[in-house]
Image (cartoon, rainbow, N blue to C red):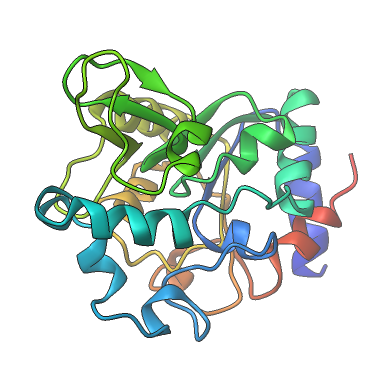
Length: 240
């Protein structure tokens, strides 16, 4: 039995699947990741993206932060790919219980997924740091300077987790519950080197841990099934 056939069999036999994904889920939609050859870490900027996308940088150099954020983090023309669409289809079929994602692009929801734990937040939500009024992504994208709240004049911040910031505890707890209770855990498009997010898969207690990633990960030896291939190709090939 090939790995693809084994995955097909496990999915067909389960109604309690959880998917945990990273940047590789969205690269096939044209959104660059951080660590690949063409990723943001290997492009040339005055400072590395992890510095620009830090809480300290946001606080001290807010205008420069937004220049980079609008240019590189708002990929609003991107469309869901085969992986996003299949996961939404699996949820509608009653097989997939939740998506846990490190991505902030909202493509899972655009594809139709409803139960999505966004560990690092979303570019589609922005809030006033003073009065907590929320704004959509268009409010931030449309400006050319620092976005200020029309209600109180406060600074508007993307609802994304920057470097040096902690994850939302309620989101983490929901993700942990989903992963811990899963029959099949499919991990895809992530290098599993970014913590604390990567450590969440340690809460999985089952014996059907599937890793789908183009490159090897530190967890390959612990997985029950490993596929080094395109996530869209693998998931897109699943028949319901």
